[in-house]
Image (cartoon, rainbow, N blue to C red; front, side, top):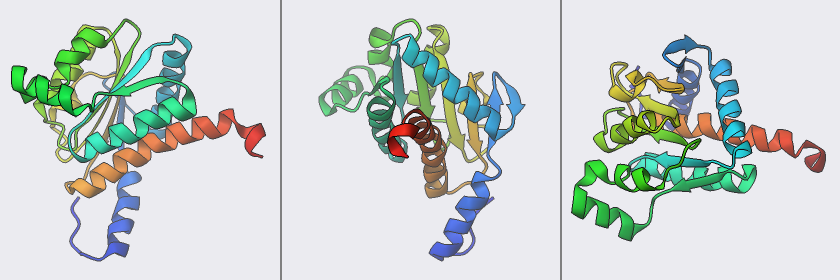
Length: 199
């Protein structure tokens, strides 16, 4: 699916359409979006109950999503949520080990049993994100992936606890779609947990 018109209203209509055809998997098995949402809420609740950590990895626009929603998960849900975006750390890891290890190298030291990882890549083929997904499998972490573009991308096809795939080839639609999916779960969890205070 690609956008052919360059008008903001049509772009928004395209985004709405893309969100209605999101593909999801639980441990490699196709499921409906509402089932994937329930599974993500359960994993987030389990992570919080164990006082485990939620880690995020992404590049560019996906990095901005990680930074935003990591602080939302911490602030709104009380989860120990962290995104490794310190400039000194990023430049050190890249200089010493190469960009493909920019997240994996520190995560290998920092993650603990019971932690979870949310890995975001629009293309699904960024090696530094894939290396973290493989690390999550190695460390028996819960793994949630979000990708787009081609359905044969590597991140969508790594066996994850939960996988979301947006069948569209425009960065903005994939990025905003990914953020909307995650934001909907985090914000609804917050609203449900604080219903009495907010009514």
